[in-house]
Length: 306
Ligand code: PXG
Image (cartoon, rainbow, N blue to C red):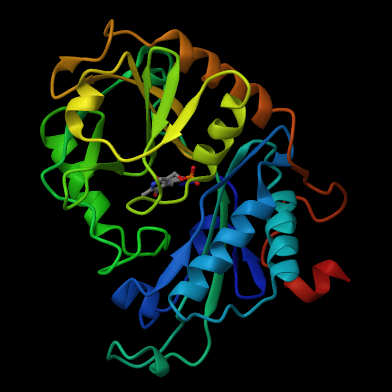
């Protein structure tokens, strides 16, 4: 069982007792949005950016959250505090809520808020040694079908790509859009290094990653950056490739379809940016409040804030 604590619509529960209805449209239709946030050393990294993106995702699917941004932010920090963890992962979800069968969102009368506070481990030692990737045959859907900037509860497109990687014994899957432009990895953005220049696709065909934004900030004044579309051959001829994501953090991709990238080992630009990223996440962020309430479960929001 996962460690931590889970908030569901006003109350906190131990992970094994946290439940949502089988009639929640988030489960029935993938109708909802989520975020993935990490906290390090008792501080939540880029909390306000994640709060803004979550509300923007909700707005794009016409979902009205049951809380304001300020309340949401407060619930996240309280959930961290109650978890007793100093390093971990937060997974807030807004779902369309419980409603009768039928995909019409009007059947769900009130949206739900869940915040899971736990831990996540994705690539282990491969952060240091490098990941292998395949090119997924499934493509990222175009904006006109489902805007990739919506971080929705419907991840089947990404999961199918990840399954192709699993079947081929690779760590990750690179995804193209319908035009053959490189879009992103199954749950991470992609960066390419050529010479001293750092390239990443524009965000019209991928998620506006917060780790991506952080890396672009870390490149400022050190490496020239170009955000532009490119094809697979550009990636295969790169000196270095790395991926970025809250879960995956910054990880080198050292082979694609069995073809080594650059030297076939993590490159110097990737290693430097990775180190700077780890330094930044461990030294900045919104402090998790300390005080009473830590570790308690099945308390309700109103009484614990009183
Ligand atoms: N693209 C996609 C499709 C994602 O899902 C990213 C890029 C990177 O975005 P951020 O803002 O995190 O830099 C994501 C994020 C998980 C997990 O449970 C997935 C993500 C983040 C955290 C955990 O596998 N994906």
